[in-house]
Amino acid sequence: MGRVLITTSLFPEVIERLRQAGHEVDVREGLPSLDAVADIHALICPLSLPVQADLLDAAPQLRIVANLGVGVDNIDLKAASARGVLVSNTPDVLTEATADLGWALLLAVARRIVETDGELRAEGFPGWVFLPPHLGVDVYGRTLGVVGFGRIGQAVARRGHGFAMNLLYASRSRKPDAEKALGARCVSLNELLQQSDFVVLCVPLTSETRHLIGGRELRLMKKDAILVNIARGPVLDEASLVSALRDGTIRGAGLDVFEDEPRVHPGLLELKAVVLTPHIGSATAATRRSMATLACDAVLAVFAGGRPANLVNPLAARSG
Ligand code: NAP
Image 1 (tube, rainbow, N blue to C red):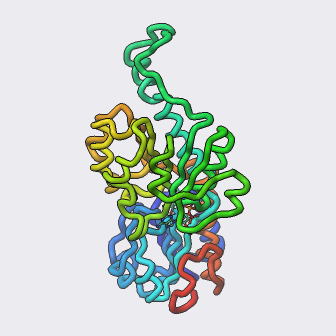
Image 2 (cartoon, rainbow, N blue to C red):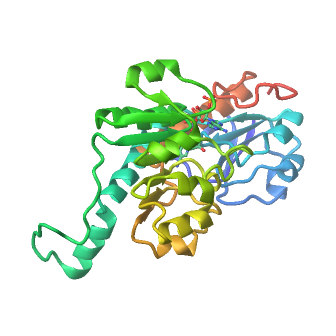
């Protein structure tokens, strides 16, 4: 029998699966106290929970942290590995939903959907006009630059292929198969920023990608360009983005993630050329159910003496 702590609301059937397998499950939303983890064997947590050395030290029996997300920047992987704690994540199942959301933001900013919806609700529909004050920009056939060409980045590009876009990407390694399938071209980050009409950020948050896009990078972009961040907030220097939007360095931005969540830079809230969503990239019912199932599978695998399919730290000191 294993003891599982779940620090977020989860689908009841997933919790029931753990209980049916004979495990003790405690659901306590939010940041757990160090006492609450003293005797747990498994932790299922959202990416908003920092899993650092202090929590790991307070949980000497912990065998697995099943993160409800693909990004694991909330977890000190080195500290977990050193203590033999396995870490799993939820890749693939959230790829398409997150790419869809990236595109929803891109289209919403390009065609001023949120701004015009707000005006219509507040002021009514004044009738069709040939030259409205809110002309948008074309998307079809233009240039899309994807930064970080992994699962989500390529899914964003596939959608761009459907919009007959010229596809550029900047990533850590070349992706010849995707280049061939989509006609995407690998370029430097600088070149991508200079040539793209739309830039979508899809990199993980690491020490190398923190503030990957700051004032210098924003100034390289076209004046009419739109930036979308569906990666992690700190990949983008938010203060520099606010300045760039205020002085017209770029046209607009769509943001699903923020530098210091849940805080949102107040400057962003004042700008009409920005569409903001509260980190909902993977938030469809089907995707969240798949993510919860994967996390549950990972815990059950470890309790059965195996390793989770989506193991992030295979070199953890001892197996579960
Ligand atoms: P992935 O398949 O690992 O793709 C990440 C890509 O970024 C890889 O191609 C990787 O290169 C590249 N990369 C890594 N470091 C880089 C660097 N320093 N410079 C340039 N490229 C770099 O991950 P994914 O499944 O697409 O997810 C990407 C990220 O999206 C996650 O880590 C997460 O933070 C974020 N995300 C956000 C939401 C949301 O709700 N908004 C939802 C899901 C995911 P290699 O191919 O060489 O490894």
